[in-house]
Image 1 (cartoon, one colour):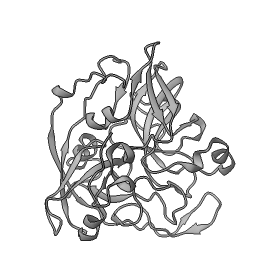
Image 2: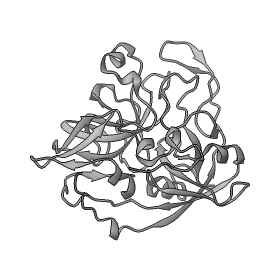
Image 3: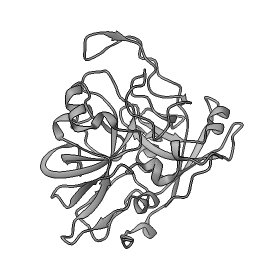
Image 4: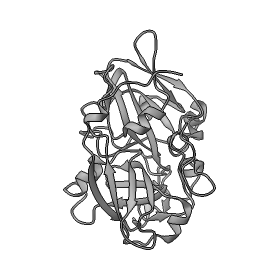
Length: 306
């Protein structure tokens, strides 16, 4: 077994941030990349049948967010307190309900959807059925400022230490960080969100209008929660192209038929000089690592996180 990578996690601040269920958005008629008009379920709300571990494609929906979507109760999407919720909450953080019939039950942060600034959370199925549209949560936010001490040139975003240690990372003989990924995505397929000025608060989309290329690269098999490598993507100080750079992200929402859009990928790791070495693994999915989504036990509890 590989030795545990050293981090600065003991120095990180744990801070409470709060939010409440976001009502589902209805955008009305939208024009697809094929030039047809559609009106589909979209972001927000409580989604009962789409969970982490499910396919990212095939849903009759647009940007569907698995589980439950939250935002801060007050404030505009790009202002406090929404900014604090989006920036400080990290994938893998524990979420506790603080109102409603399921008060006290817990879930897990699984992604941050940029633009709408939604926090996406996985709960057991029985909790989903008890939730109300105005229920509130408290997140024990932990992970902002996380560093890999042996890799000072690799930046981390929006990932909690517990998840990081379950991702089967290792250092190879050439001093590179080996990261298991479900797929490697070329830069020309990255779309909406390119040019964003930071990687803390959201995601950006894999473009899916070229189905032949997706099939050729096996990207049509992506699942929600998959860990993926983004080739030639430098997201240290924004989102853009740099040859040789590598970013690692998590698929957080479903496909879209809109031009330039598709499954959303939240970056959790990036390096500008190629010290990240992706290695393909079918098991590279945060639902497996954390025992959530489709990998929860039949009693709704996270399975053994080994």
